[in-house]
Image (cartoon, rainbow, N blue to C red):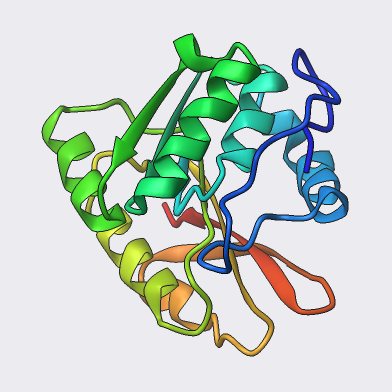
Length: 186
């Protein structure tokens, strides 16, 4: 796994050992960021279920001004921090070692400005996409301009997004998974 483009281009990234995380392949990451490119420069980026931090690091490398990485696994947090140090992007980042719901509450309590882009890649088929989107819909971290992209398995029913007050902008399907793009309805 490596950084695809930007200031940290071609630098290799460490991954978390074992099968507790699913690092996004370079090919899928490149496709994702080809579509995300207009939204990233100057963005405040939130990477939930960050794993090794590859998505948020790619965003920082491509011009995001700040990224918050959230993961509750000790090894993942260590990996994210090491990858940020290696890519020299640590000064633009915050790493939170807690579960995603706790992070949303803490960031909301700090009166954080809304994020421009939020990416979440939860464990598949546990219903976490819906749970996190529900929490974000009530949070000051999201406004009508915030783009949320979530990764899910192909068999995940994403019809819940509209019930939560989001508009489905795009549903990009790959061989085994998908990226759904949503935004709060006005």
